[in-house]
Length: 206
Length: 101
Image 1: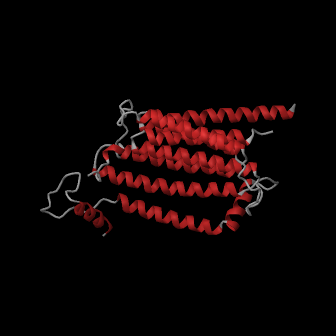
Image 2: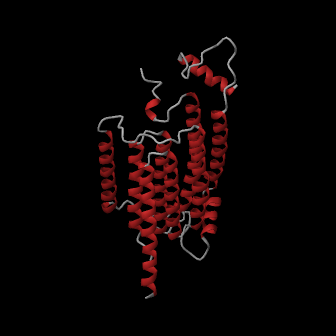
């Protein structure tokens, strides 16, 4: 009785989260307004967080909400507002004739392939990694921390370097170029020659 | 009893496919980027599912690293998008044809 109830609850949670995830994903793809797409993305990310909790990855669920739904989507919204593309795009117009049906067909074929292969394949060797078991009496955070800070310590340090590089790169990319010297009245949105374009980018570094 | 892992894997495959179709179909660069995030999330879901199925914390550790790399990727990608659209109006990938002969 209790098991049946638990199964029912688990199945209900899974079905609800799956519906949220898929509807959010479809919303991202079909909504013509980028802001609506970003909000649909939040829906999907929350659904995935619920599925993480259902599989006892509690720390990752929290990080998913904080980093993805909190930081990354806000960053998306910032950029949407900043560059002023928050107007609806004409999604009916097809730039390439017949590209959309082919893309959808390709997606369906890929999905069928993945499902077919995952049914038949038995690729897991059964060999255990050295990360440690996921189940056990310890809390999830403790196990994950032990794995990251011992077995994967070097990769963890590398990610910190990666984050520093990303921050420096983003700052360099979006910095305004210095004002052009007088007499150079090239005001167009495209540099007249490739040399001029490269020069403008190189000046950004100086 | 929890829901079987194969259901999660099927859901992740569907999510990945929707993201891939979105990248192919949409012309707005920002929305294409969001679709890439969908695909990353599908893979994360697969990793967590396998971590549970194979009883191995390594899958969850890998999701942690994927999250960090995704954050870095979003920062750099959005920086590039801002740098591009500061120079030219229009938010679709078709407008970026500077290299066209």
